[in-house]
Length: 170
Image (cartoon, rainbow, N blue to C red; front, side):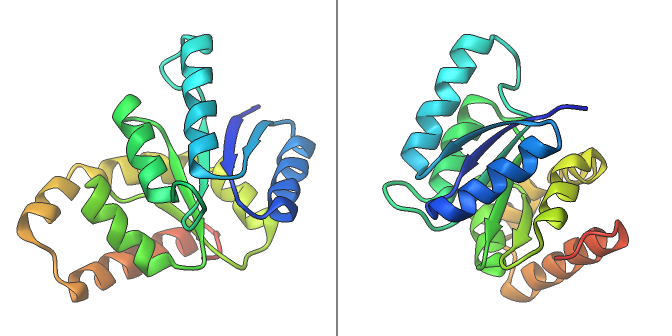
């Protein structure tokens, strides 16, 4: 199974590791270095590919110059609501809270630092994505209820348990 992956990572050396590692597994990778470049590349593929999902996964660093990962995700999801977004961030709890508030959904995350094989496993594991899509049904309600910090922590702990149960380090 070959996947088409869009990466937005402002550290060129890290972006290169992603590109080489995924390409070695037979995946097609487009690399961008900030949120604005990522959005431009996404739109270009959306127009040219004429497919419902121009990428199988979009990997976003949370903190980037010009446009951060959350704003980039919001723009992409406005274009294609079913697009799979994976945040790669050292700020996992902050990212989760921001995703629920800004995107009204739970997103997949990989906490930095990590082993590249763990990220590859997450991207290649489509069952996790399907499970999160099921969870997203309740995210709009969660937002309406004004979830507390403690509730978000419980959600976060549950997601980590889900990932660990599937053999993904988080």
